[in-house]
Length: 267
Image 1 (spheres, rainbow, N blue to C red):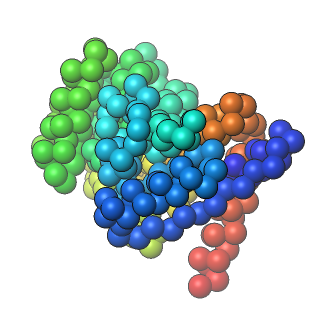
Image 2: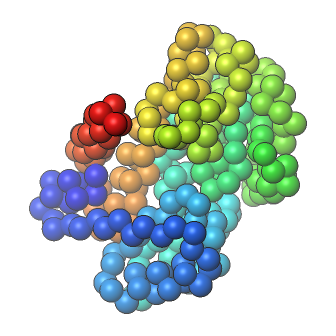
């Protein structure tokens, strides 16, 4: 996506995967120091390091500081500055689903992506955010951050997905559950209904077991495609100072997903 967007703008761009498995703080710090010294414009940070990198950076943009999670690190004058374009990207992606009556949304997951989703909902004036997480303390922390951040949100911890969905108009999965090769769903299909919209941050596959179950109930759905594209577009603009074509980035995303799907089916 980044390389295609750069090409369309007449730039020479290189986006390099840096595979880091099981890194501790020292390992992440070493990698970030390499980013600082080797001339990168910046890097994206993915699961499970979005919170772990926060104390290793020189500065945080206000949004990233508020939630304590970073998915984009920009290098400016030798300083590493953390941003969160998952939040801005998801806000752009979810806006078409939201109606004035959408004041109660259930969010599954309070990790790095779940935090970004919850803050994105707050930025879209959703006033009732129900958070459920396998670690209640993590959900409590996110609810507290939302309620004390001047967002005018009534965030609360839900005891279960069923509790979170009581009277809700939307459901969002902010966990890796359902990402290939995992085929589980974070919400029992019996709880889904036609008058509920359902979104998933997972994009591999695009139609996760959760979204397939929601479709079967007649619910509106949103795949992880839009979040993936919009967060990348916002990161690209931070890296380069130029606004990319989301249409071109979308074409690049679709080409990669089609190739992945073909490879998975062949296997």
